[in-house]
Amino acid sequence: MSRFTAPQSTPRTRRNLRTVLALGTATAALALTACGAGSDMGGVGVACDIPMPESNTTVNVLSYNSPSTDPFTNAVASGCTTGTLTVNAPATDFAGQNQRATQSMSGTSPSYDLIEVYGTVYPLYAEHGWIDSLDDQIAANGDALGLDDVDPVLMEQLQYEGEQFGIPTFWGTIIFVYRQDIFDDLGLDVPTTYAEMIAAAEAITAETGMVDPLALPFNSAGDISTAYNQALGSLGGNWFADGEATPTIDTPESIAALDTLRSTYLAMNEQSTSWSSPEVITQLQTGQAAMSMLFAGRVSALLDADQTDLFADFGFAVPPSVIAGGTPSTSLSVDGFSIASNTEVDKDLMFELLGVATGADAAAEAAGATIPARNTQAQAADLPFEPAARAVLESERPNGLPHLPYMSDVYAGMAPILTQVVNGTISSTEGAAQLQAAAVTAIAAAGYTP
Image (cartoon, rainbow, N blue to C red; front, side, top):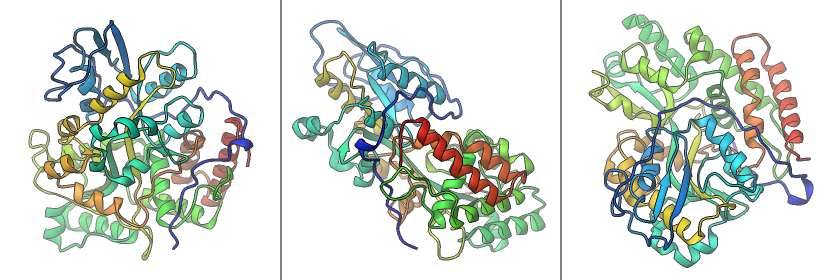
């Protein structure tokens, strides 16, 4: 199968820009409030050694709250508030961030200055001119950021039309998680295909009595769309025609991906369409499940002796492919920070704060919960799940979503259709046709044409 190269944009002469006020939804996360500290400390142990502004200045940071994002936000919100500088980071859930970012950056009265970004939103922000290109700042002052320690693949994930619009903070690929002790006891090999994964689940049930060994996040609010992206990529399918705003998700590869979702669902508990990552992790922690596929940045809880007695029993591997000879069924996600173009704060100060939020000290603080983008801190953390994630990152097709400004609109409308395919309400063929039509509608509503 040939490697898929995601189209980077639709030619600007072929689209009619509109302000897009509705982005995709996702699950809520933990809360965070900013607190003051000295200028030499950020978060718990992050240096904030930057020039302070001469007059009183307030900077507002917009970042959804989670164990992975909080250390980077804390680096500026906790440590850089001192003297003339105040840095605020109001508590924000994932869906709330999308709405607040769009409202703030599309208007003339900005509420936020430093914006947390990720794959489905930053191309939209960049296309609309809502976040700054960082190329000039990096050329002039980038040595201080130490960006040579960030994997180039991760840097590319926050580029748009060849320009750098964000600096990565952390990343993850979907990896295979399994109870290594059970696999060893039963003589099971790590599955390399979905068929082998389902067969392993059947063997575990037969030998141990575990009712539902396989537990995947199939939540109909959004995780099911990620599962579709995994299967589509593994089968060599593409989302769009190269260089055009034309969806290609009514193809044989798409139908096969939908068939895969349906057959996998039938091998799990019927409640799996209500499961997101936290529910699956709980099942693994309590011994109710023995296998899953999860973003690497979310599995650290499985290694915490305070959270599970099984902390020493988990193994991590490259995920299986849908069929023999396919690429791993995975998805790549990269988070980072960008500077809002309409911020009224001095841009040199904003770049300094960007450096703190994405710097080595912040990465070290985050390494216990996720894989930092900086190689030095990632390697020092010696995370048991990092080798599997890195093997996927360096593979033929890590399967990040296409870098297109309407990707979030397309993605948001897919989950209800996918859920109907999974639960058998509609066939895979009908589902692919409906997905294609929904994508065409979403792209047109966002102001783009093929």
